[in-house]
Image 1 (cartoon, rainbow, N blue to C red):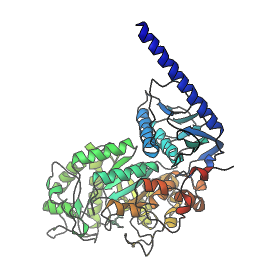
Image 2: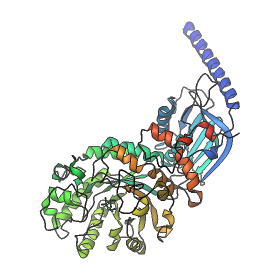
Image 3: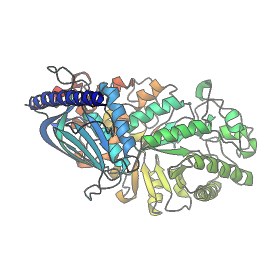
Length: 539
Ligand code: TNX
């Protein structure tokens, strides 16, 4: 007993000495930091306010994370940060550990009720030389703040003198919140199918740039991609094809749940889309009773649009849609259901309107808010429904007249599937080339006269006629998707192409580390701008 107390005291003594000597070293090293400048850190999207205090916080093996443990989701946000620090630096940063003594180098992630924080996604970061305080009203806000923190951790360690590595985080204060509540991108998994793993990788990248919506285009003429238990042939038959004769594929309901859960962990809402009454060939081949174009439907692997339609006057069509909307809504915690509604060129106008109005009621029955491509505003629908402006200002104006919200996705500016220029090996050209500057230099908040109060946000769609692998997806999405993230988050007065260009160039090491095959646009000076500590250091 005495012996064990003695051993314990020796152990505690040694631990204290070891701890003090670390502390001493650390303080010395903190004093030795060169001046930093947080205001030069290449954060995307650019925050509302950044105030630099020119010192350094040492992220090292002594750092620990503490979170508001009793607040929903905060611990998970802390664990997410720890995990990302591990993959960037190899440091193991404990979360809410009880055995660690009070020390310098703590990252606190706190629920705060400050009225300075505007909205659920707002956050404040106070970085001093001995602590980082991340304040947010919600776990979602904390999660957005964590992305900023990840972006200001240098790619490589910054202390060459020390016996252990340090990643120097520039000190200062960041106050931040987004301009739009809906900041999305869409992935067309119908023209070509993308696996759960591919979608997860895309989510990882979107989350880093503070996206909060991923819209999945789950059905089209060339493929039906989600298991519907009450209509099994949809995936058996309709899921078997892709554009160009490739092999198709679909998500089981378990797969879809996995995507939804992974997105939720990244504070991203999944918006499912079943495109109808046009773009329905794959459904009609599976169940010909649904078909309304007077022909015998056959599996289709081409790229033309506008030839298919449901029979809008058949009760069976609406029982089918009821089952589909019910099954998908049950698996989808987010508030939205997208009914497509675009390019129904062979549906009579009056049938189209009748159809959209009936389907809106089904969407409401299952507790969801309807989104449709801009054509849906030609029907008499509720102001709670949302129009996605992709092509027609006239349709978008009709939505505004109905007091609906509008999502800005103009094909000329926001389509990720357009070629960058005439040399692009992938992509389409029908709405023009979209180089990286054209994608960035426009104003979703003042586009074609849509009043700001009607704009829910921005979404950049990626149609997949010309892409079938994750590398090809990455080539079209990056770097343009990074710019759309800024358009959705950052105020107009804080956006500037010349400034953005240098911050974009500094994303190269992150994109390389994530193995993203981005398009190295010649408009961007990629080589020069590897984000190193020296570049955010100023004497
Ligand atoms: C138009 S955008 C479509 C899609 C195509 C896309 C190709 C929209 C609502 N419909 O069916 O895939 O162009 O860019």
